[in-house]
Structures are given as C-alpha cells and as structure tokens.
Image (cartoon, rainbow, N blue to C red):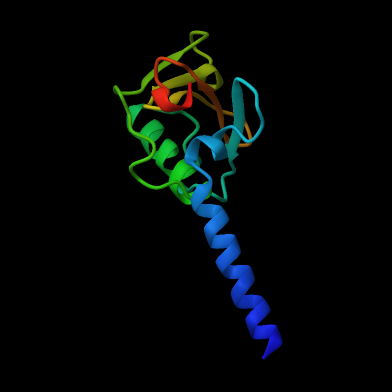
Length: 132
C-alpha cells in the first residue's frame, strides 16, 4: 500500500511540475540565446528524403515540438510560411529552412545521416511580452 501511495505522489508531483514547464523552456533548456535539437531518422518518418521544403519544414517543427518535446499544439504558432533555400548551388546538403514562430525562429538542416537538425533562437520581437 505504501508503494502505491509513493507512486501516486510521484506521478502527481511530476504532472504538476510538467505543467509549469513551457514549450519555450523545453526549446531552450539553458539560459542561452539559442537551443540545439535533432530528430534522428528513426524519430521522423519523413527523414528518408534528403532535401527539405516548406511542407516538410512545417512537419519537422510539428514533430519536434509536439511529438518529441510534448509541447501543446497552441504553444508554437507559425507566423509565416517557412523559407527554404540552398546556401551553395548544386549542394543538396546546404539546403536550409527558416521557420518563424511566435516564440522565435528555427533554422533547419539535414545531415548525410538523414538526421534533421534544428537551431532555435529566441527573438524578443517574437517572444511573449510577459517573458521579456
């Protein structure tokens, strides 16, 4: 019986603590200006494609924030369509997407291992005024 009570209290404490953690806290776990994240090819079925486009960039953000970081769907809102472009002509690995959201912006790239890499940067003009 004591074990059940301890387990129940642990679950309640964890749930209460998890509710206080925002998506921004998960995107930037340390007090830096940017946070690094990655989706491996096992974590994201779309990673079979080497290149990114606006639709796959949107899906990548959704997969990272909702499936991996467990953010609420309303916490990260796109402010405009993702912009994707080659940094170096004729080099598919140089394709980079910029995704602007209500919390800041993401830079998304793919590596040769087909992992999707994210750099999230908090930008004051995108941030909630209460957190500034």
